[in-house]
Amino acid sequence: MTRALIICPFILVLISCASAPPAPPSYELTYQHLPRLQIAAGSIVLKSAYQPDEAENHIDTKKPQNPTMVVKQWVNDRLEIQSGSSAKLVLTVIDGRVIRTEETNQSTFGFLASKKQIFSANLVVDVAFYPLEQDINQGLRSDLRVKIVSDKAVSGAYSLNMLDEAYFMLISDLAVEFDKQMQGVLKKLKII
Image (tube, rainbow, N blue to C red; front, top):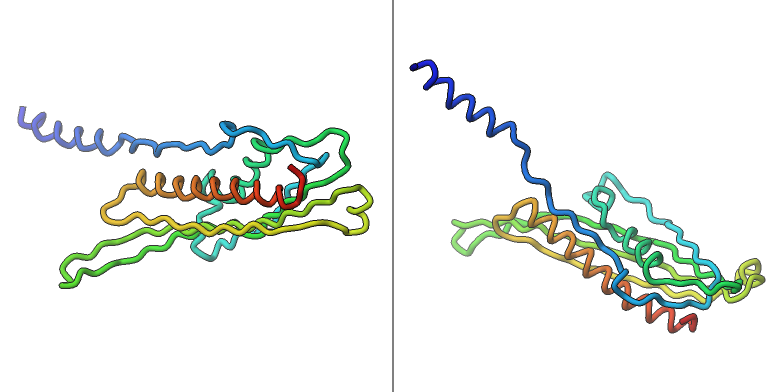
């Protein structure tokens, strides 16, 4: 009997340690709820000149939603090419960093310190439009640059789910701003 009383708590502790923590929420980012934009181009080319620096505190390569993915998803969900057109739209991702930093804030009396996680996202995309096939060969084009910088902070006692949610909100804000700016760029280039 005493042996059972001693062994039972140990078994309960082992069982509680063996259970996996709950999975973080999954978030999906799409533009499918928005109408498609008919563009005066027969093809779209998406390039990336951005190379993540693993030595820095970049987390853009560790998450499924990142600034580069925003551009790809936007092209897939929002743009509709004009069949028969020889014009070409080229989008080149120049920067797609997301950096996470941590700050510690001291109170005025030094008793309470709080930590704050700050996510900063950068997205820079060059947009080039080649109206005719011969313009591509001659290098004639119209181009503009889209640059977006966004920050989100999580402070106080935070959990992994809170950090994931803050990160997704950062990317969502970036996606909304990218959509607005890209519509303006396409209007300036006179292709929508």
